[in-house]
Length: 218
Image (cartoon, rainbow, N blue to C red; front, side):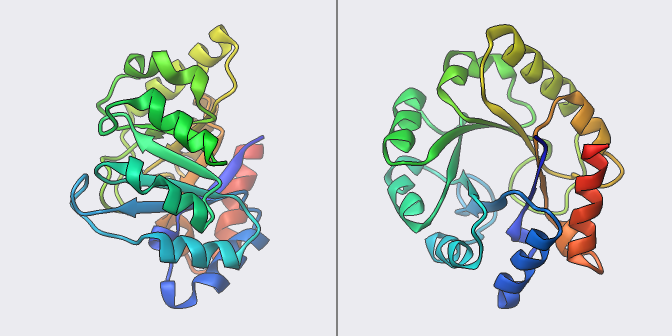
């Protein structure tokens, strides 16, 4: 199954519920929530209050991407707020096995994030522990950036490794996903497509979501 996960980082928060609903009508499968703290990345977005608001706005799974320093202490808060998936950066978490296990014990599905310049082999020891592998296709911190084409090779590598080892994680791609490249990303092996500005900055959010979904189903 291929899933469109609109990123509410690009949404209008004054009408967040309505905009989430528009993506849902368009066939969105998840809602992606980018949490930034101004320390791990040079931007600040939102915290558990917005996660809670999103949870109340939709029945879709909330895919919460933590771009924060020392995420372990805050993971319970985000799960309590409604996160279905929690993804943490391998570049930040020291005891990654422990963190992934904690997410699982608290009732959410654990995921791992790799920045564009982080090689996939650094994650090999924990790939069997995760439900979701998020590959950043821009350097994290801001929405609206262009897709880094070299990440296509990493997507292919992750898909091949999954098949070789008979693992079950979904491959998610976040950053610069548009109508111009989503087919290439899909063909490389991606399962979950995070799209922010290409959905929420379009003239019609529902149609934009539908168009992306149609392209990955063809």
